[in-house]
Image (cartoon, rainbow over the protein chains, first blue to last red):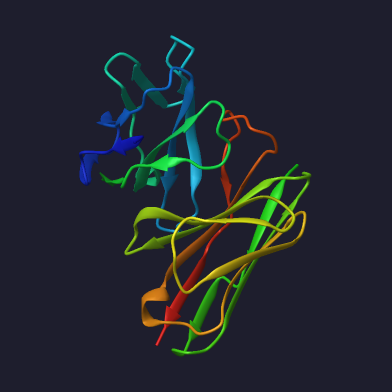
Length: 115
Length: 115
């Protein structure tokens, strides 16, 4: 069965510093997509970044970047220059390339950015 | 551009009363639609998804049902609410077809409290 594991239930970081959130997944598929979503206290779920498994280059969106290690089935999220507005729950998710029906979700990591 | 609307935002209902949460999507055709529940601020549980009008797939046996009377309308219902139905409900959509590349976009959520 396909699974997504986020091993850090809670993390904290000082403002302006860098933090890395971990995510591992398990699949026998070769072609798939990985996502990081953010859920701030407002509870609105927002896409942070997306990675295609067939791309070797790590995805980057401004201060957010991923370290995608396909062989290790690892997909960590790095947040640089952390801001107070980054305080949120972060969810890692996975989907097969050919399955548009549903995503497999991790349980989330609660990140607190401290002033 | 595509937008997703979900209402009501907050609902307090007595045990045994009916429920209707509504979700509509604008700016796209034949979307894949989803209902998720999130309890205690952690983890997303997929309840239902739909790939077309009248086509509903249930992920978890429960006290809830879903309907898709129109292409861009998705309704979550219950005839008699239970205390355990309390939670945060999220509607989401993805593009049509079978591509895992399609991003899941969420509504603002509905907070249901059953007393």
